[in-house]
Length: 321
Image (cartoon, rainbow, N blue to C red; front, side, top):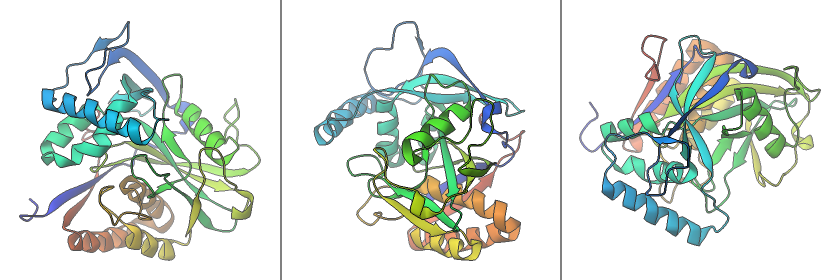
């Protein structure tokens, strides 16, 4: 148990879920989960969310209204959330949800007792992908989040984004986010790599307990240098980290944050970016490099009043069974 006054920060890994994105089917049930009081879309059955209180629903409505005043471009679009993942990892079964629920979860869930957070996260595991993009001149590309969104001005792997309900496979999500954020797709219709892409390697699934957003993680090695990656409508500010494992470990430790809240998180890593980069370190520096990173992060988290746990799941312990 954490020491009194110490908050937990849990980073979870599913390192065995390493299918290529075009082989992971997305199968959406006619069901809907939400936090707010809005109507359920026609043709969908609402899932009863255990532990969700009237006060939470009211807070979600108010938070959304406040968010719209700050950013009128926000829309309550559709999101898909994980229902379960079969043992073979070849598909993901999904519920329908919405951005309003995601917005509330990211802003508010961490304020509740840890077990209450876990229960909510069981229903609102909004499916995301994140790519660790390595340029031909050995730099890792990161994006700085814009202002007036969740995790403003923090650093996130690039490209990254949510699965959409029209996507049939994870490859559809990978391509859409890459095209929108980098300016070019990764895979063609046959699953072959485009010329700017040297390799695409699946690393597994990860999630952390500040935002509770599961992310399929991939390493994307590019055939182009940083100088050929420009701004797009989706991403205005691109920063870099060193791809060298030793230097990268030090950069991750320096920029680690267990939360997206507070005044000191600008230019720190969004917490799930730390998880994604940890999977990358494990892939390029082996288990010893990964253990070295975990040891350093554990010490930093203590100084920030957190107890860090890195948990690895197997087929038998997967909570998305």
